[in-house]
Each structure stands twice: as C-alpha cells, then as structure tokens.
Length: 276
Image (cartoon, rainbow, N blue to C red):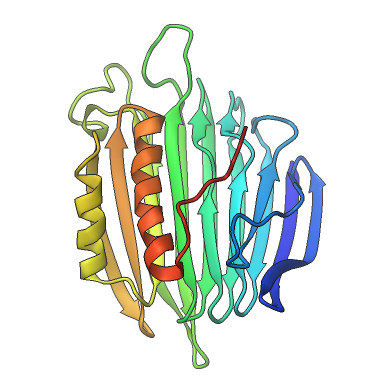
C-alpha cells in the first residue's frame, strides 16, 4: 500500500514543490533539474520493489499555472502474483493554465499469475500540455512461455476544464487478457509481446504532428498506429500505440517521439534521466 501527494508551482522561473506527502510504500527522491528550462524532475520510488495482490497505490499530482514537471520512476514497476485480488494504482493528475507534465515511467512488468488495474484521471486546462509514455512487458516465466499473467486493465480518462464547464476529451481503455494456449499468433497483439503507448494532449497537436511522429516510427521494428481525438476548447489529443518484441525497441521509439516534442515545443534536448 502506498500514497503520494505532490503539488508543483512556478516560482521565479523555476518549478518547485509547494506541497509533498507520502505514506506507505511510495517515496519521491530529491528534485533535480535536467536543463535550464526550469522544469523540475521527480523520481517515484517503491521501496517494496513490487506490487502484490490487494495492494492499492494512490498518486495525486497537481501542476500549477505555468509550472513544468517531469515525473519518472526509479525502476520498472513489477506486478507479482496476485492470488485472491488484483493490485491497483489510481492516479489523479491536474494541470493548470500553461502547465506542462511529462510522465516517463520505466516499463510495467507483469509476472506469472499477475492481475493489475491502473486508473488515471486527468483534468487539464486548454493551454496545458501533457506527454505520457508507457511500456508494458510480460515478465520472465520459469517454463519460458511468452505470457503467464492473468489480466492487465489500464484506463485513462482525460478532461479539459474551461471557465464554463469540464468536458471529456478522451477515454482510453487497454485490456490485455492472454488467452489459454498459444498467445503468439496474429489474433493476439499481432504476434508481439510488448506494448508501447504515447498519449499527447496539447493545443499544438494536429494531423501534421501525427504525420511527423508516424514518419519517425517507421524506422523501428514495431507495428505502430496513431490516432487523433476531437478538439475541446482548442486542445487536441494524440494516441500512439506500438507493438514490438522487446522493451529496448519501444523505449527507443517512444524516446525519439518525445525528443521531437521537447525540441520543437520547448527547445529542450532529448530526455536524459541518468539512471545509473
């Protein structure tokens, strides 16, 4: 069990924590800055090392007006056997005017007999910017089989808040429930074992950007599709989904896409989290 509450504000050109609280099996390391942009980077840590059956993790993050946060993890999120009940993570994200949030966790690894649910609820302003990347991979199994986990459910709900109302922009549901027997055929993830996702919401998202990202992905050994959401108050979403055979290829693909966004939108270098 774990709980984290973090609020980021902009002060004198730098983003800093105005409030932070943690309890149980969640921690955050001391903040650091990867460049001179003022964006603060926090690293989320689970001292227990893994999620187990009936575990519940609550993460509440607010990025205030004009602030910028990069939130990552110290290592992969591991889901071990969950007999009796699933492990669950509930994340609530709130972005103010011109706020910027990049979520770049290490991969989610589901091991044998694991069941996991992840619910992410996001509320943004029309001028907010969100970039959220994730990779899902099956864990090692003693018999070498490709899939031994039971079920993964990942639900992301994104709302855009204006002065008049709050409106749903996108609802993204991912359900992976490996069937019995052979799970490596064309009927299940096109024969691939790993899933990568990139969700981007920003007023600058458009078809031209989708075409740029698609051109980048063509250079990688992965099956990739990109779709645009409708626009709400001038803000548009983009969802990129990739299937591949290993984590490294998806990390390179998603890294190249986020590098384009960081350079074009904020003049930043590609992300270098320096996890050694």
